[in-house]
Length: 141
Image: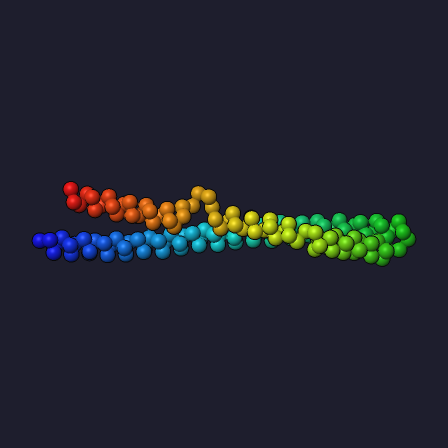
């Protein structure tokens, strides 16, 4: 009788471990799906709004180049001045803004991948162990 009880406990433990492995795998699949979808949505938003912003900037730059060029007497001067302006902005961003941009991107994408409301694997495992302990206590009563 003791051997049969021990055998049942081993069988139940094996089943619980298999259930735990399956639920852990499912949890990580869902978490990966959630993270990848958030990343994809952010990428699409960046592409849509970034391209619209670039069109606005392009037309404003061309208009400003024509305005500057007409006031200086040659249209090409306006385009050279606008090109130089964007070159200086790019150089300043490269020198002073790289670390800020990298930090902001890291923070933003870390928030996408790691939510505060997600439970950690440790918390999930502790919950599974508590549930298993309660199941064993009920069986022994």
